[in-house]
Length: 328
Length: 145
Image (cartoon, rainbow over all chains, first blue to last red; front, side, top):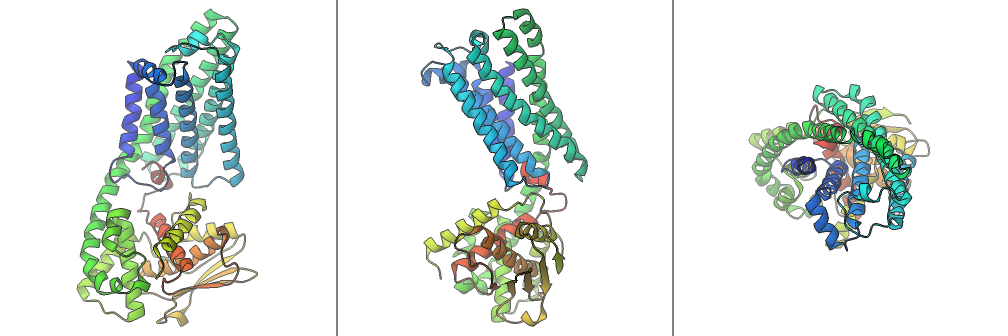
């Protein structure tokens, strides 16, 4: 039941991120949510059995689920790094990619060394006594734990810099969830070592932590993800509607001015652009092209058209720019 | 007028350049200028230049040995002035990422009849979208929202 609830929670996060109006140039976090949701879904016994049967019945579904989890963690770390306002250096990005690649390759090779011929929904319980299985799980959760500890540090370090209480809170909740995953990873590694060394009493003792930490970490990560997404979705929908109204109102002006000159237009059909590219992007292009036409052809605008253009610019422009000098 | 294939190629070039550009901390035009400056490793100067007013050219990028200089026409519309600057910054960024870039020299924003100008204007639009952050639309929201 817990597996179903956690997987459902993760799919709610994915669905929330896919709501109309939720946007953002950076989609790493959506990719992360998708990968993690698929991984958690494969943890549901019935679905695991069905998937594994389709994959040949040798627990390849376990490998798929675990690789999806690792990919999700990797995407989440990449997305979070970008929220800090500092793009990672090329060297750091490469190192992160290489670590993920090496871990995924090692996990795949180790999985192939495990003798697990029959589908098992208790994979590590049934096969964890094999050294290859223990190594498989240890490598996987070493990577997951390391990535999530890095993520937690990023969240905590940058939380105070964020201007909104909600964001600071989200960062701290995400950090708590990431620390939860670190603890979970340590717990799993402890169970693996106890299992492969045949200390079964120790394994049972350590396993008592697993469920509460798993649930707590999942809930915290989902909550940290969703808080700003909900607010962002509401605001995006409102802005999109306003931009669409302004674009529709400006369309006749655009047709009269820039619309008739191929050299001033980037797109053949602004109406198509409005449908395809989002209202704000289309409105921006219309305003620029109308202004270009006025400059190049001396087209005159009526006072109503000027007011509409001013309203569109207020909608689009965050703050006035100006001349500046920047030194390297 | 470009062919559809040339237009798609210009759009792909702008998209690649945007993806490879470190936009994480960019919220204002000055942030973008700083990021361009950092990538080039030399000073960048952006100057409103009245002699460009009323002409067909409304922005120019001059790449000298010591610095990058962006001159733009004065404009009554702040958004239009911003687009002049973004277009020239886009040329600078494309110069650093494209195999077939023109290298050191100058580019001028006038009309969009060749691939380099269209790629720069499309990249400028992407930069404008990045700057369209409403107050409170922070990098966190751009990623999570």
